[in-house]
Length: 426
Image (cartoon, rainbow, N blue to C red):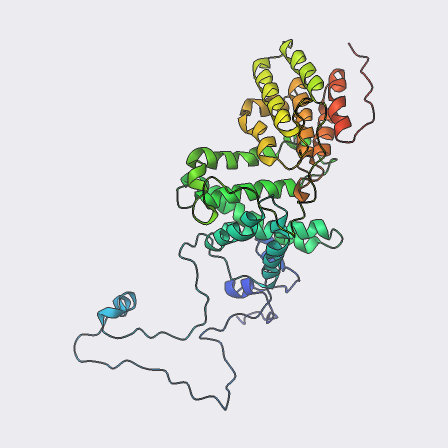
């Protein structure tokens, strides 16, 4: 039977050529790469021993040395390759151009293509200046770690692509695809490595889990989407945040902040002349004491099942407010950007609180609404933009109308100043 003819793809991407499958040559990404969440690259392959190179008449002829045969038993090639010195001769292999790979290759990914190099350049020159106050840490130290652990590098590229999307929203679907591809590959590997975390990779896994959190915040679901109760109320990130807590509680900060991202304790934040966060010092103290005390009184008189844990959550929330805003007697003037203070509240809470939110316990939803005010202080970072409003609007849709008056104060603080009418239900 004659074999059915088909049109060959001579200009396919590197991944399809490597797998020897037909490429539809779709750009910027072919269908095969989109299907398997791979970065698509149409650049010319590196020269290998099977490639033909145009000869240069002026160049001297290439002479391939050969090995002199000796009498006796034939040499075992496998042993010779593994131990060249055993024979007294140097091993000669086919000429092949390649880049040196790091010693620890957890993600055997192809070399960076031009799109990835563009993202890496943007990360070094722009994105790294926006991830926190310590510019030196994100711009200089973390990339060194990324060159040793490919999944960290992929997450840096994913954040860089999302930053490009944030800066150039119209026509940025290409960056969205790149971000998704790099994030999904890294997420699969990080998830597999966390159960076996050790001192060798705890720094990389800590940075990876932090970047995965930031990635989740940078891609918030739309307000009108209703994929699940957790996402509707704005705490889907809680599960992602568990990864950071697991790494810290498993290894400790001293082990994490060593090597490339050391020393421990972490150095004081260092801004630079190009640091875009340096000019936003914050909005100052807000009178939070009376609303929070009223909320604590309400919780202390609640007969809701699990109210004891809600009182503990309320006290922890008040402590975070105190450290962010200060007090009326000792106000804080730089209030925005204190991530380590704001995220301490979800850190100390247990999974039972998430369960109370999922079960629409009104007191838990009200506490979450007050936490949204603290989230707003992190919106100086581009990847946190809109999360305070998104959280409040999700809670407002699910909160029992009899309790809506309790979230009026946090609504006012984040700019939703329309007064909520009190429910007439008893």
